Amino acid sequence: MPISYRQILLIALLSLFALEIAAEVTTDDKEPLIIRKLSLLKTTIDDQESPIMRQIFEFLFPFGPGWNAILGTFYISSVPNFILAFIPAEINGNTLNTMTAFATGGLLSDVFLHLVPHSFMGEHQGSGVHFVMVEEKRNILIGLGIFVGFAAFFVMEKSLRVLGGEDSHGHSHSIADSVAEVTAQASGIASPSSANGLRLRGHEKSPDHAPLEKIPGSTSANSSSKLSAYLNLFGDFVHNITDGLAMAASFYSSPLIGATTTLACFAHEIPHEISDYSILVRSGFTKKQALQSQFLTAVGAFVGTFMGIAIHNLSTSDAEIESIDLTAGVRQSASGLLGTTVQLSDLVIPFVAGGFLYIGAVAVLPTLLAESKSSSQALREFAAMAFGVLCMFLVAWNE
Image (cartoon, rainbow, N blue to C red; front, side, top):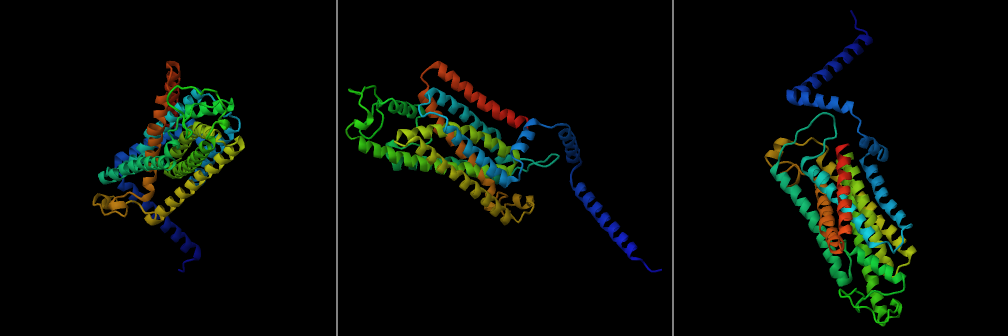
């Protein structure tokens, strides 16, 4: 009895369906029973919950990792610079220090609550549960990546100080001093300064309170101040590149890491941009020139973002999007760095964590310590920093 085409097609479809079922059963059989039970429990719990932060992040970042990184870079670059247009150069130093304390709390909590744990343990994005194999050599490389990020920021700031002499400004420039000098110039009274434009540490008063432009030798002082301003702009450009790298690396790691890193960078950029704006005005820039300069340095963030996207794509291409061979990782014969499972893209987040740690703990906190002149101001800074940590904690906890 001849077989019709319909029967042949039906047999082929049934065979294909049977093969798919067999493959699924084989895959499920490879998972221990405890993992399947825990995954089912976690999936059930996740289906019953709808965290508010996840909905907000999905609204703010609706695209894939690459485009979300670019969008996050746009948020942290455009909004702080737009705010500058409405902020006077004579902003109160205590207010700026309070904002800086809040930003520092957010930045350091992003390091310790998100970036460092993710660097070592990863971020699970799928449904169910997952387990992590402890690989000692991998942890050593991740820790080294954190230190390299920390050291790179130290070398960058140290180099800028050497190039600009003592008048150069890094991340640790004194915010209150900058604001005080701008206020003094705006009122037509020069602050006590040395021949090279530096403020004196003593309390001597200018004998005649002459305006700055009429002080003998002010031309050379202004030239030195201009050089300091340009070096500060270069430092901002390099710093913004690292922010862009952070955006790309974090969003490719997970949506949560990307969103929290965006919040941390955003909180840090506002007082940072205000203090840099004050430095530029103090150095002789007009308000328009200072705003234009800040927008130009913001381009560095997009440069860093595209660099981070390229690093991820190259690393993914090298790995050929294959699953990690855990056996090779144990034998230290994997295709990653030094025979481990670490890929180049895995070191970007640790590098960013080390850089953020330097900015928050080494570059910014000492200025807050130096500028705390009253107990009430110190309490405001403590509260602002604690509020910054609380915000980042609540974001992560309710994701």
